[in-house]
Length: 174
Image 1 (cartoon, rainbow, N blue to C red):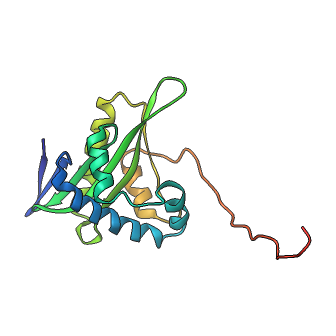
Image 2 (tube, one colour; image 1 turned 90 degrees about the vertical axis):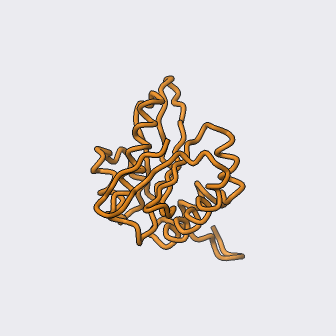
Image 3 (cartoon, rainbow, N blue to C red; image 1 turned 180 degrees about the horizontal axis):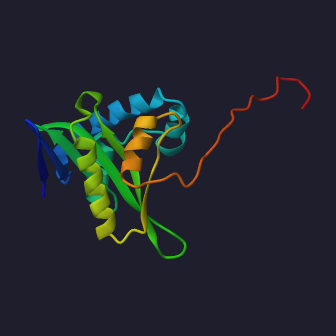
């Protein structure tokens, strides 16, 4: 069932993307998100490790049919401008986490409550699913994303570091 909020003159709507007709909009939003992430510090490596290939229309169709992951489509005045993708992750001790794989709003639609509406739905789903917590990623230096998650009481619990290494020169000693 769609959740609709009036934000000033705008109607912000979030729906669980259960229809095959949403896959095209989701794929376009995913493409925009991937382009934006790729240009951020750590973004190219994040994509290479976690999302080497775009889901695209067919991938979102498989997710919607599979039922394990949950996909939300966010709209402002009926135009699809954001999405969220989350999945349960079973832990060794029998508990589970809700992992936010994506939460994205087009830049021109930020600041009107769409991201918040999407996150509210993710948190409600996680609570209903009995998750012990919610995990999401923020890239280094992305203060806007970090601050967004912190407004929801999320805190860093790990810091992953990386160093690129160069292979030895051909024919050189190791």
